[in-house]
Length: 167
Image 1: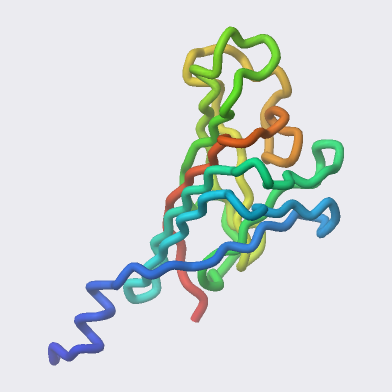
Image 2: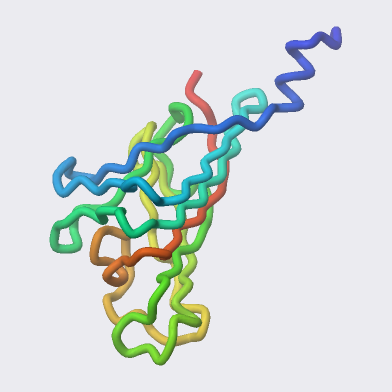
């Protein structure tokens, strides 16, 4: 096997930015990041593996969408996947201010499992309780405008993972 520049790039990927698009599973109740959310989205590809990470801190102008808890948030993937898969990463969400029933915002962080529900979009599933062992009042499931809480400025969604790229 010859060692070429192309071969070196395929085994030593370069991280690059991507601009995620925020939608919902129905396409209705569309959220928006607004003008002052902080979004860091980076990805790299090595052979057919996509590595990615996403860090969003919502600003005061973010619009979290609407719906009654059944219009799940979706974020565009950096590159098309080979297939829909039930798990392609992990992450966390955290509310900035204490939701009802909490004495403060500490412990409002929750773990996530990331799914590729289409070959081009991620959805985010709560995969455990709060880190302080307080049960989640609104239950578990895929996150949206009202699940697991009413989102606020300063709330965060952080995720990372990998998946197989489309051919």
